[in-house]
Length: 199
Image (tube, rainbow, N blue to C red):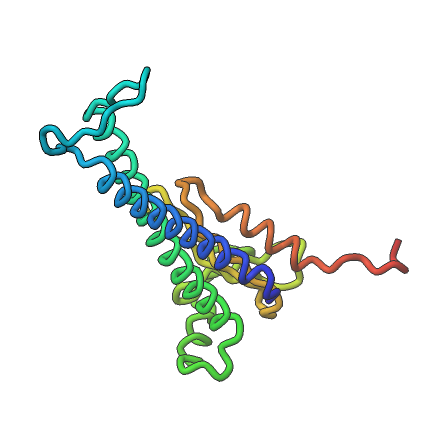
């Protein structure tokens, strides 16, 4: 598998986590400085004199901006957690794809190979293993082995060519089916380009 494609999702997730951490830190620092510089309920008579033409900022305005900063902190922290979880799940999913494409030497090699074996045929193009679908494409000389999944608002696809040269993993935050896109991508990757002497 191309290591560049393998690490792009990990980098995106880690950048999300880094951005979230930055937002959370900035919000926390500004919140601390503003709470020290402008307490919400200052003691009576402790207000410094105002400059000519300046107006006293009402406490409601300070509360509004404090709420905004707290929201910024919470959203930054959520982005940090989501980015780290995304990096972890992407790494696990790529590991699962790699283990199924190249089971040799894996602790579960026998189980992985057994799960790929065809147990039933639906028609000339579709067959089923324990947990894998084998799709025979007229454009390819080998089947695509794949499985999908989903829950509310999320879809996934994991598949590879039978010769284990190409694999595709899609993790999406949409309820739209990712199967046709992933299978088309696998076909495009696996179709041998014509040799120059065949033109």
